[in-house]
Amino acid sequence: MFKSKITKLFFNYALPNMINSGFFSLYIIINGAFVGQFLGTKSLAAMGLSMPFIFILFTLSDLIAIGSSVQISLKIGAKKQNLAREIFSFCIIFILLTYLIIGVLGYFSSTFILSLFSNDLELVKLSSQYIKIFMIFAPLLCLSFAMDNYLRACGKNKYSMYMGIGSVIVNIILDYLFIVYFDLEIIGAAMATSISLSIGSFIGILPFLDKKLQLYFVKPKMNFKLLKNILLNGSSESLMNVSLSLIGIITNYVLLLNGGEIAVAIFSAILYLDSIIMALVNAMYDGVMPLLSFNIGSKSINKNKILLKTMAFYGCIFSCVIFIVNILFSKELMQIFNHEKQFL
Image 1 (cartoon, rainbow, N blue to C red):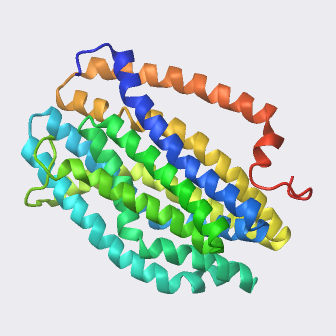
Image 2: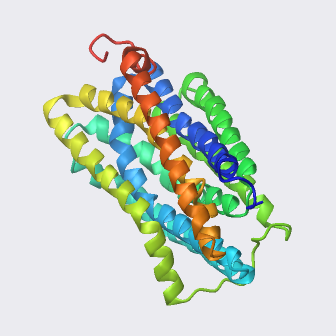
Image 3: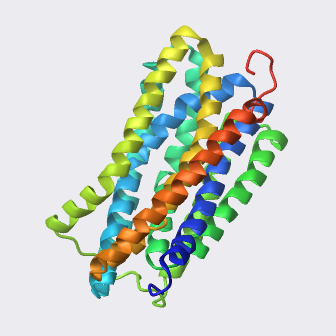
């Protein structure tokens, strides 16, 4: 599979991951649209206040999943499949146990932490309700993000893509049922996302339960040097996500002080649109990661040089197109979330 032309390989790996990430980010926009249109700017602001905290909590999962998938692809490229399986098995167990603990701590501390950033009791209450649902489902949610990386390491790009699309479709249906039909308000929005992603986790883990893929469950094994490499490989993207989340928290705090909940709602809507753009660009590069790691493991460095140039070229074209679309259709894009005159 790695003997095809570089451009063809790039699209085979990048496009399914872009579609998957695009649909995954679409759920954020759809959630925001349902909340903004049916529950109003107060609930939209509560979601915006909650999301940076949720993203920070899930950063460790990204750190382990991205870092370990790099190491797994390196081991597969170097014909060390059993070591790759040991890393995979250890990381799955580690993510589940870690987020079981994080979920409990996050559930009971969310109200206190949010109260440090806002004196609006209703806004804090709504935000806390939203976060608590995510904390209940934390282990399965984080496993969903991890499975995407491991499926791509095994070449199951399309399976990962269909898993992501299926999760979004379920999320849309549940958003309507929980928010509009059952009138569960912001709790319904959190439940819709949590349940749909949890279903994605179960679907994602199915291919690893038999021994047809290069990865499957074995007795987990890890050593300090390997764990250090995993943390280093995953640190760049994880630290970027943490920094963006911290910026979001600080910005929300400043906006609450100076513009109130309407300002936070506006900022949230802009971030929801931004999330799908950034997700597509990042997915273009993340999708090719297994190829880069495989080539390093098999000593095919020249292929990586061509691949990196291809990534830069198409990333630049995509970014320019998105920039033009945002400039021309800014009002129409914001109307997705709310039609109030002050909001627009």
